[in-house]
Length: 70
Image 1 (spheres, rainbow, N blue to C red):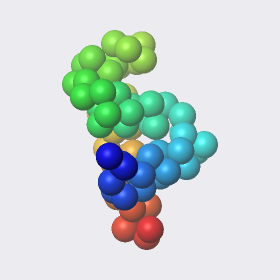
Image 2: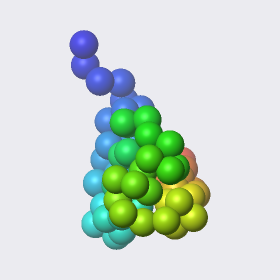
Image 3: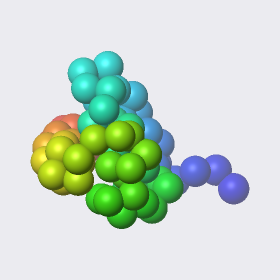
């Protein structure tokens, strides 16, 4: 079936985030869509789990604001 409006909205917001901060967008992709843990995401990206955790928190807050405004 067609993707839900929510998934489309998240995808569009993610594209906007990628233009601002590619790494944060990649972390959201790995965590939200692929379902990786903080540690697994850190391994994939070659960065520390602490950086993933910080970026994940920032990206989620940013996406939340974007989706509220939509």
